[in-house]
Image (cartoon, rainbow, N blue to C red; front, side, top):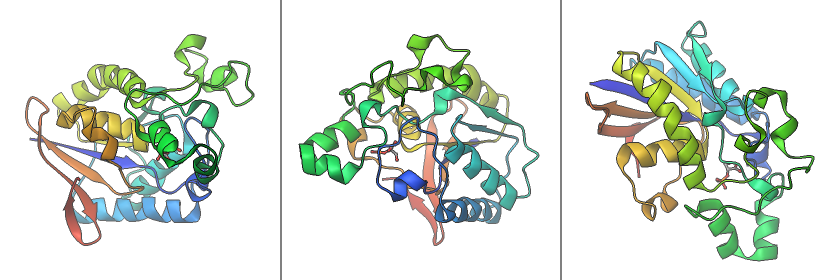
Length: 237
Ligand SMILES: O=C(O)[C@@H](CO)OP(=O)(O)O
């Protein structure tokens, strides 16, 4: 049996300000840092240990991993970062306020933008100052690989090759992994692992800074999955 831990970053400044974030590289708030430290303490109290960590190239996930590992006295662990674990790209909505957009376009439209499986938000213009196409951290990618918007289906399509090429082989080799990532890159992974339908994934939300433990069989099929809450194990809903 293998154990894999997924953790969504702690509260970010734009979570607090209720802004569409996507690939925008925002910091954790003081609450987000505390959530990450608490996650590390809970993992340690549950007796979980890791051999390696994975994260995105966005600092809210990277710093969550640091604080979590620091609380476990395990910042020495090897860490692999990939853009493929980044948050879903939010297109032209990046930076805008979610409540303002709901007032302007209605709750139903905002729900489609936020949770539809295959309808992406309006794209960024390639020349938009918010586009990540000039960002040095993505310089190894062809420009067209850097999204201008994404629906969850697009996120699944770029997360799964990384699961297959990097994460799954590590698990099969016996490595105990923690993955610190984002609400939607983790929803993509959970959808795949648990075989959740395109319809049912719409209502699955992953909270900030709460370790989600998967117990996997030899074929990497989930046997159990649960959040590590202060009160103990809580089933994934
Ligand atoms: O803004 C974002 O990038 C994400 C995660 O915070 O928001 P949502 O919950 O709408 O997917």
